[in-house]
Amino acid sequence: MSKTILVLNGPNLNLLGTREPQIYGSTTLSDVEQQCVQKAADLGYDLIFRQSNHEGELVDWLQEARDTCVGIVINPGAYTHTSIAIMDAIAGIDLPVAEVHISNVHKREAFRQVSYVSKVALGVIAGFGVYGYLMALEGLANHLEN
Image 1 (tube, rainbow, N blue to C red):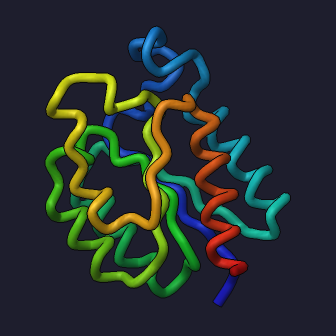
Image 2: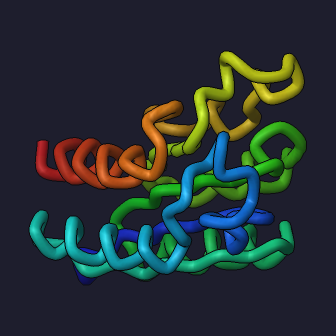
């Protein structure tokens, strides 16, 4: 199997850079992708980077990853707080998953402090802006190498 990491982004993350910049910053999702591709390469991994506003498509990509990837970084967006389907997909694929949130969800509304994904994730990074993606890649690589 190749040394490929999948980075998945949930709903509304395609609006990064313009959506609520006071919370999510001005970096675009394309910028995040470029940073992640470079970080993965530096760590010795290939990278697949995807975004969808559709829960079922995210579930399909998670299931496909079990045959093509060694780990996953996911920012499930609002599905963090609602998607048992994504939680079940992660539980069923037997791959390490790092959960990322750009904002510190624990300082926000009560409903944002509940994560179904965290129940099946290897670890969670929140509140460091888009740098959290790079932290997640480093953490995941460290886990895979050790």
